[in-house]
Image 1 (cartoon, rainbow, N blue to C red):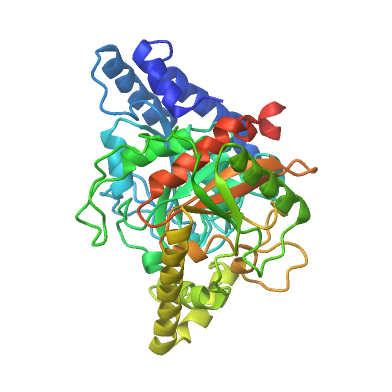
Image 2 (spheres, one colour):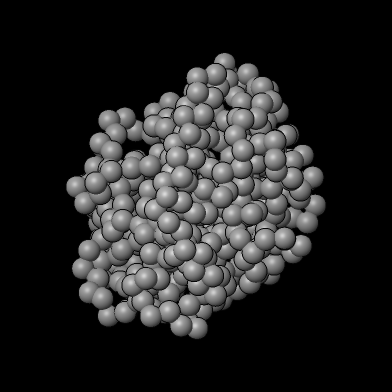
Length: 461
């Protein structure tokens, strides 16, 4: 497994070429994508041309930035100049015009990243798995008959199989962390506003952009690139003054870690819980002061659903809705359209109370550690796992969406595999603006383990 940070060092020493790295990514797409369906668009010619230009810059000692020449993919929910952004929908006109990049995509171009293509998403990124009428379903690198998760499932699968070293996804209720947990990769939902967004999401301030990688170090390096103030985003934070790689190897000795196995209301798969508990033990062995404690909130699912379903209603309000629209999206949009302004404000009040509660929690604990998900990947083509009593994706993602409500940084790292060979994720949550702390804890865990170095089933064949 090649890391982006290793590639850049190889480019600098001329031990490897951006052209070689890009060709390897394109070869992986050729080999695997027919089995997992992670890409909606691949531009091999453009990627190789960009890689050759990057190679020339490295040879002359004038790279554009720390991502120059790194093979990259973009979730098809973020604008890309010259390429359509279809969002997994049949309702968007592919003709465009597509004359503007999203802020994070623009930052990648400025650093010289080689963008190989765009990855799959469910329609308007509305759910926790990745399938759509337009592009079909995206499979898991460890078992293509299982879901990759979502809504950034294409990006997670692409990264997991080396079809590009890193990717940019979006996360409105877990959409980078869910597929990271299901695919054995790494993803960070940063503090809201740290990565600027434009155009704004119909789901409002629940939606973040985030890096998706194989290692925590690469996630920090990608975060360095895609952050930075952008005037198009009214809530964009100032450009960070310090690299997210600074202090990443400082370890966890003395850190106060609050560990919640189930929030007091979640039922985990027993294998998942055992692996997460073992992972927390690794942090304790590394010097963290671990206390098993629940943060003390009731499940905010109803409030989240009001906000999320309202966003779905807003999405579909601009179109004539017919049978080409995901039936699940139609269903929740109808629910969302029935909510009143008072319902929305009540849900917002729950959100604010949760934010206050978590702020006080972090006065006692530096980070909160939880499972990323209570389950492992389930069969492809389903919105919910077998036996679910609810049709809603939020029913099986209780550890992710609360932190979209609070806008806190939340990192998912792989922490083991079940007997069936499916990955499990560990989630690290820090106070708002403490993104570097989540990365530091994740790096300490990866330095002591090798789960992130395991080879997916497809790649091992």
